[in-house]
Amino acid sequence: MSAAHEVTTTSRPEFLDPDGSDRTFRATVYDLLAVGARMQDVRDHLAVGIGVSGPQYAILMAIFHMQSEAEGAGVRAVGRRLHVSGPFVTAQANRLVELGLVEKRPNPADGRGVLLCLTAEGRRRISDAAPAIQEANDVFFAALSKVDFLVLGDIAARLEKSSEQAVKRHKGPTDK
Image 1 (cartoon, rainbow, N blue to C red):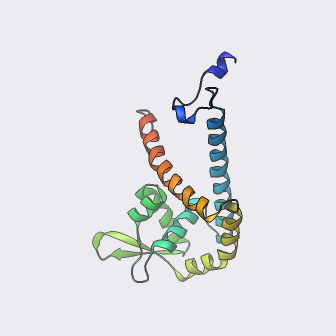
Image 2: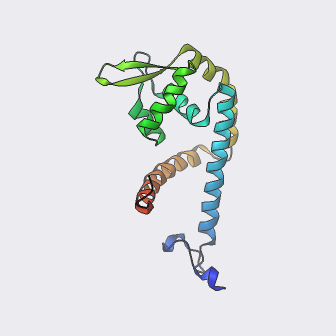
Image 3: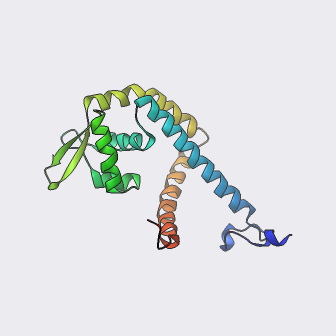
């Protein structure tokens, strides 16, 4: 083994191959990166069909799934669901308001907050895009059984938490 191959990218024994290399670990990381990039590509393509950007699509879908008939989805709740900041949601929601897809209503539970609600046009665009969204999700996750999908959901939730810790630990003082 050359000196370059003696360095591993993880020290956890459960992630190392029997020969001490990290080849399987690296392959998994590369696969996860490819899946994430492809998921964003599919999201961005679906977004174009609705007439919005990828991040705006994610916010529209979050509002669609979170809003109740009587109220709406809070900015912070949407941010938590999508793992983005409240100010980012606010900025994108303002663009969605300009496009006539989202409206803001006062939050009756918090006079300072607003609730985001889809307009009739926002609901129509999601409804019109539903067949393409369903097909994309069906094809994207076709390799998984019900059990696989449940396990993936659990793993994804745990990785989201540990990846957040990794980002916090490795941000430099000038990173924002």
